[in-house]
Image (cartoon, rainbow, N blue to C red; front, side, top):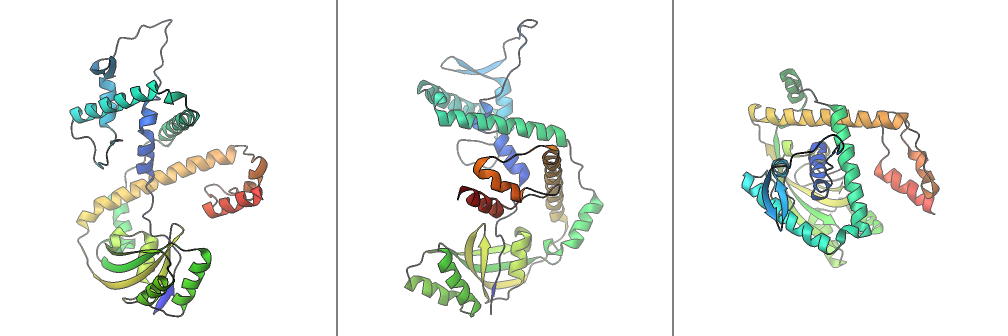
Length: 320
């Protein structure tokens, strides 16, 4: 049995994660402005933790570095020690000194990126201040969430599936859609792709229902083991065959922290979107030149935003 679905296989992008990465970027760190009233005050020299070719690295910089994630390297964890944070700052300063010697700070692209980073820092700082502290979810709210999402604990399931990420043109995708509609199975379609030298990347995955996005869970839950379906993942097509599915319930206790985090992030995201919607509603926004076509997809109600596809289509029409 084969079915077609359109959805997203990506986990929901986390607002707090992306905001943190932007706020503490290397470029942004180089843009911190220190206000100084020279007429009235003489500021004491900041405490220095190290000097690199005569340039000081302050205690304040080390403290700030301890609160962010590494730029160099691939670690996903905060700095384990103050010494490690200072060591990273030394590396950064050495690189920055070489960049200045090469006059890269005068490069138009670097200057544009610097200005963009400054805009992002200021925008995020204002949003954090305007939104304020979001209330922590109550125990009752967590209980209600678990009641409406039994797939996280009592009805948790484990899915195993094969997939092929398709790298095809629109016409070729339409051909594969026809094959799926005519109940060709996963291996038959892969055979067709191989015979016609069509590109794809084959993989196999296992995930529990609590690890899947709501849309992915809905899609996988709608097909039976052995079924083949065509999913979309961020605009890319994936041929999927569900190989097995079985119950894997767990106790609610360990899940409560996850639910609390999820609710907090959703609440923060909603607060930010509401604040931005109110700004857009009270602003005079005018699209100019080729981008005038965007006026057709400008949100008509507070909180609504045009889809990326609609924006691209509008821009395309405007450029014709």
